[in-house]
Image (tube, rainbow, N blue to C red; front, side, top):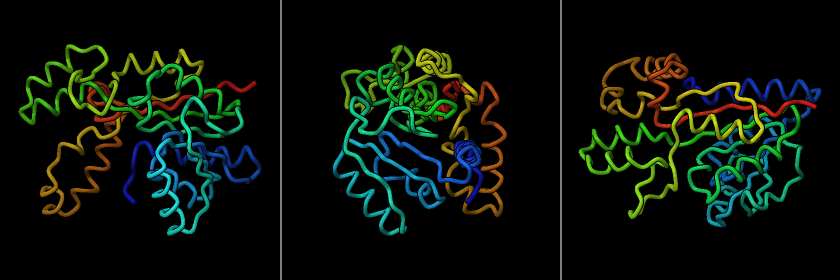
Length: 240
């Protein structure tokens, strides 16, 4: 597996959580975890994973993937209003692709912060407003690009936009801090990889590995971080 900026942070945190727990499996809560893109690999790595997801179809796919991978995942149908898990017990809470689609992002993040144990962490991965502007402009969708620029929430209102909002660095950081969490890292995910044509990687030996290393090197460097396809915040709940 090629290095990934988000995965690298999660791996380090889970190793630390396992040490804090005396070798016991880290407890991971994946809210809006869908079909288990993150959850199944984490369970395979020895974590005790709970997924909270409102879609029964996604949960069915998750259960199939977990069974095929030979892992056990606690799948709960619910949302941020009713997590269905004890508060303050998770070592790591994932909110990947979640805050863009919930009705109330501050309330949702407050629920996630309450779910994490003191000293534990929350990983938030969201769509970046400025990346959406650039990508639409490059694709020739100039009107949509301008509308995203002018809309403070980064939403294409009046269209079939699947997202209720997109984020920029200051707005995301403010949201996390207001939830009572301490920001340890704010990085970009998908800075140049989404822009490189597949043919470049297929026809140039070593290009894929070089691209992965470039992504890692650029992840925390502004202004490249600030125009990444996704923004990743890793934040901690202060230990008591």
